Each structure stands twice: as structure tokens, then as C-alpha cells.
Image 1 (cartoon, rainbow, N blue to C red):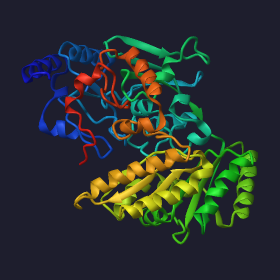
Image 2: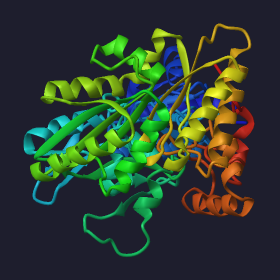
Image 3: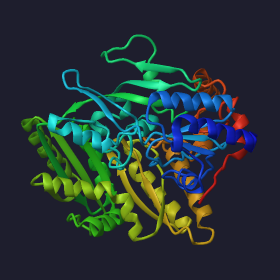
Image 4: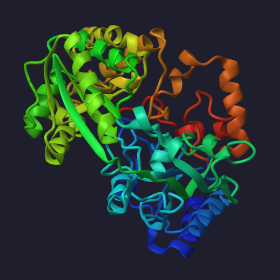
Length: 479
């Protein structure tokens, strides 16, 4: 354990170049003790750098004082990836929020990691472009966080997740060196270290600049809302749309309980009597989009669709998407707290796993709400609860594990876009063999042999050296 006197010396050194942007007050430590998950930890010091050079200085200081560190973006992560364990220094990149350069000719923008996802697309929109990954939290999540978790969103069905939209990353490695991973060419030579870093959840270093690929705004967009009296028909329609050779830009599904709370929240005209709705978005050239609309109509009619609503204009499109994007927050209409999972199952197993989710929620006396990326089978089952209720957190945790187990047994995986973090760290053995995890451990150690970067995340054992920082880990800590 690092002594308090050493921590005071570390804080003094950090303040020598950060000034009051190195903080250890109770307010800051409490604020940065958790992310968007239900987990909580204990940071030692919070730093707010504004440049690559300051990030480098912070990491070198941590090395001198044998103190682990973790990078943090907006703190919207839902798997505990930014929850501090091992009393680390938190490197919060929110002040590194500049769009540095936009190169329309080469369709590349260099941005700092604290740039917000939606702010980037708003800046690009007048130029005819956008950043394709669009998590539901895009109003507040950062590009650095998107890189850390390889985030997706509704439109990743057609456009792919973050790794498909990042050309290069400037990184401060755990030993303090600055490296450029990837480059701006179409086919980079050698190993894809850029791809390896994306999705590593801060365990391989801190991103300080990101070269993102720009996606042209489509000339035509149509958004449809389909409702079904039986969720099975809706799920069957999802598979049938894709089987007919159509890959929508987005294909989202909400169950009856989600429809009710969303409609009460946004008044978008969602049919509250339906058992399920599909939100389908098509984009591209006008002729292709209109053909796609007809394909969706024909498929929906074969699967007992109730009605097919086509948004008349951009305002109606935005209203329909407002319901989907705000579904998680709308859960507060029924309970003050929620626990959200992020498993992926084969499309053909959607109904089977959904039914198990309902059964699991009933067994643990919880409320389940389902809003998910149906096109790629990425489930987001929400367990709504009141944390003031005695014993409820243990039930929620047990139900969450049962949902993960059901998804794995159906041929699924642990996460589609939220990452592993702390939440699913101890579930990795459900999906990977000991040899698999040891191999991943070796890759992590190639970047961070001494275990300083976000220790004890992702892999159950942590890296071999990072175990030394494990004495303060809030294993399964719930708030």
C-alpha cells in the first residue's frame, strides 16, 4: 500500500504543473467515484489535463510514486470501466475537448478525447458529414469513451461500431511514452495496434488525440414505426427484413412496457396497446430508400403488423428517435433506479431470450423493460428497482447474472458495446477458456507490463503485476 505521505508528495508534484486541476477534495473524489453503472470505488486524486504533455506528466508522476491511474471520459459507461479501483489517480479528459482539424478532402477529423459525440456531428453537419457511431448517450458521451469501449448505437447495424470509424489514435502509453497507433492510409501496414487499443477500456494507455473518419450525410432518409400485437411477430419481422437482402441503417425494438413509459415521456404517438414496436431507418439514394420502404411494408404485412407509420418529415423523425434515445431515462417514471445489461444473442434466439428475461425478472420480483438493437441481436434488458428497498440490490445482481447466463447459453456474448469493466469481469469465464484469458492477459501486459493502467478491469485476475493494486477493489460493490 502507498503511504499517505507519498500521496501528499504526488499531489504536490501534480499541482506543480496542473495547479488547481489536481484535486483531492471530498466533492471531486465523490463525483469521480462512480460512472453510469451501479458500482462505486475510491479515487485518490483527480486530474483534469488539457494537453497530451500534461497527460504524459501525470503518468510519469504516477510511475514515480507507484500509483495506478485510469482514464475517464464523460463517465457515462455502464459496465464500471471508469470506476476507480486500487486508489488510482483519475485522469479525466473532459477539458481536452477541442476539434483540432477537419479535412473534408480526406474525410478525417482530428479531435481530442473529451469532444462529445453529438457535438462532433453537429459541427460536421453543415459540411455534409457526421460521425456514424451514435450511442443513446451521444449527447453527453465523449469520443475518448467511445474509443475505450468500441461503442456502437442504433446505426451500427449498417455503419459498424467505433473501430470502423477511427483511423489513428495518439496514445500516452503506461510507461509515459507517446505513440501514434494507426495512420491515415486506407490499409495500414503491420499489426493493427489501433484496432487492438480500441475497446481496451483504458487498460493499454490514455488516448489524447483521435483521427475519426467522416461519413457523408445520406441524401435520403426514411424512418418507419411498425407495431405488433405479439413480440414474436416483431422479432420474426426483424430476421425476415434482413433475409430479404435489406440492411437498414437502424432496426430497433421496444417491448410493451418500454412503449408505455416512452410515450408518456415524449408524446411521440407510440401505440401503447402494442406488444412491441420496431423503429426502422433506411438511408441512401432516393430510389433505393423507397424500394426499402416497400420491402419493409411487405415483410411486416407477412408478420401480422398492426400499422406501418412513415415519418412525414425531419421533425417527426426526430420525435420518434427522441423516444428511443431517451428510453433509459424514462424508466424513472416507474422506478427511481435501473440496472442495464448489454448482451448479444443470435437474431433467431431473440424471443427465446426475451421470454427468459421476463421469467428471471418475475422470479426475483423485479420489473423488466426491453429496448434493444434488434438488427444485430444486442439486448439491453433494463431491471427497474428502488435502491431504498431492503435486499433489492442482491436480487438485481442475481437477476443480472441469470440474464447473462441465459444469453451465453443461447449462443450469445457478454457485451455488444458497453464493455466488460468491473460489471462483467467475473463473467469472462462463461465465454472464454483459461487459455483464452491468459492470452488476452499477455497482450495487455505487452502494453502495460507493470499493471498501472486501469488495473483489475476486464480480466478476472487482472494482469499479473496489477494484482498488487487489488487490495482496495470494490468487488461487486453496489450503491
